[in-house]
Image 1 (cartoon, rainbow, N blue to C red):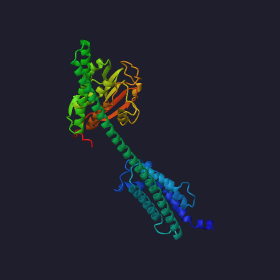
Image 2: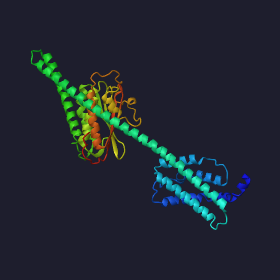
Image 3: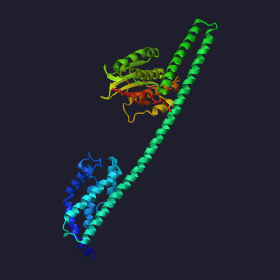
Image 4: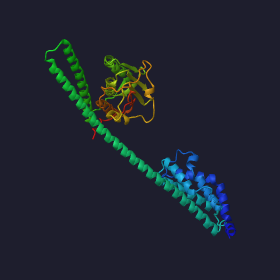
Length: 428
């Protein structure tokens, strides 16, 4: 009975052979037809193989079924792979469906052309052919749509997780910002208390050596108070959205060398090396004052908390659109789980880059500090917040690499031709 039924479908086998011979023409027509459809816009950059993708395998399944041969591939799995490819290529679901509609329309045209005078296919063969055509079309759609649904759910879940992570980081940074301000206010109160005590002691009778020591205490704490007040003033202006950019053409190499030269007395006082290395000329169009403030804040932190070794400033032209400023120190690094460390963790580079702990400038190899710096204060994170806010204003990116006892590297990538934009919006 099976042999008899098979024999009645020999005309379908002949059609299968015809479609097989026309395979290349069918695929070419399919691409041309899709290319002419204004509703499809995601296929222009595909090579022939990329555009066809899994469709030849689906046509193989149709061919084998018309010949009443067991297919060598599962059409649902093949269609699923095709859907994944189109998803990864940026297709919308409707584009995928329209493409399959065009393919089926071309196959129907080929069948009609093959039997234009209705002499090659009887009713039984015609019914069998269109059943198989409808079957492969349904499987192609089902497999592709299922893959799109699964991928859509996965993408939505990942997006929700990413948004939640971003929100958590934003809330965490807000808390750490408050902690930085709290630490700064505590440092100010402590410094004023020391100044007041030293002032009172200076009024009583004391030896010249004691007076000298009291004056030294006063000078150190007044310097600390001045620096903190300047940072808090900068921070308040940024938070209030009062900062704007003034774009000018200038040689940023000269600016960096001037800032580093001005910091030399502080470095010498602390017996630290400080160097600046980079191209003699690096012409940019940007805000000179803001770049100076960024470098001064980074140098302030590096010199303040580095006890042994030095601070190394470098700059380079990354490409025609970006240039890079780096400040590396041999200080204690950020203590684990400290506010500054958590802030720095948000700004780690996406990939391992220069490996700062393996590179020490050739001028002087200084061993890393292994003991914790007792003078380390968490208020240093305020300077980093100021730098980050200015970077946001200038559309610059900031990376931080730091570890306890291994120093810190801060890398800022600036635009070579600064875009003009408005002041930073106040934080909510």
